[in-house]
Image (cartoon, rainbow, N blue to C red; front, side, top):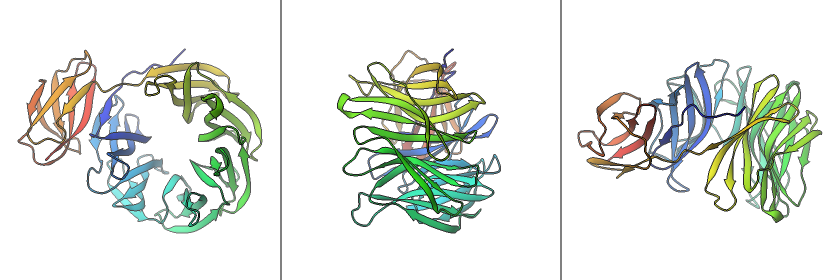
Length: 392
């Protein structure tokens, strides 16, 4: 058995678009967050609502105003209330929204949060803060907020190491577990675990790996009081990158390690998901060693002992349509990069309201629309191409 997509959609905002996370609203609607960027200093905060066919039904993104970006989206005790964290109006924020992006509250905070979870209406977060000197080292920050984002406590830990990672987990004994990576200027990064009590005091820490190879933790999950870490191992001297899955007890002791090499390819795992009582999905990508920009999505299904029960490789969808110029003032032109045919062109505002509809042609006049950012959809029989356009 293998996994294959029911549909794929290209979603872009005229820049390099990066999806960070997806959360369920209800049985047929989802929120995707992330950011688009034009260079290293200009970012747009992307927030999309899609249906279960992958089509955009509302766009709440912030385009071209400030250097905004969302780093994550988290469920609360209510399935239709979400927490966003990232940068808004150039400030670090936690923001609570409903399923239609109506703001419930926003809290300006002092930390650039990497991960956040909600437990008993309280928020637990982690961040990494640079030392003042030398600036390339990071300290590990554990932070607790109340139900409306007010700071309750902050504990900072670290030595002359560089901490990185994006996974913070509640443990069954009401503790806090950070799973990430740690390194220094003399050593390659290693997987790093840090256990704290309910008020952020250190209980123990553990480093996994050696000084000869890189071992990265990209995601982690606790199942049945055991910790599963997903990431990759890099054999630098052999130019090899392989996915890894490590099982540990909650005292940080390794139970077993598994490695999943791909022939003639570098492969990385970015997410680990439990799909039922006995199975995990490891999701990531692999790239051709000779042509590293040729990438495929990889899905590895394992049992709870790390034994593979299924695996799939899914071609990255390439952009099938080139839309130009973007930004534009009056006309849009379409260059089809595949054999897919389209029947209709729709232009929507950022709330998903239909503004203009016409039969498909290779050029359309949009001069009647006011300046701003819009969604354009090219509709085919069984496929849709969605992109953002800017009218100046």
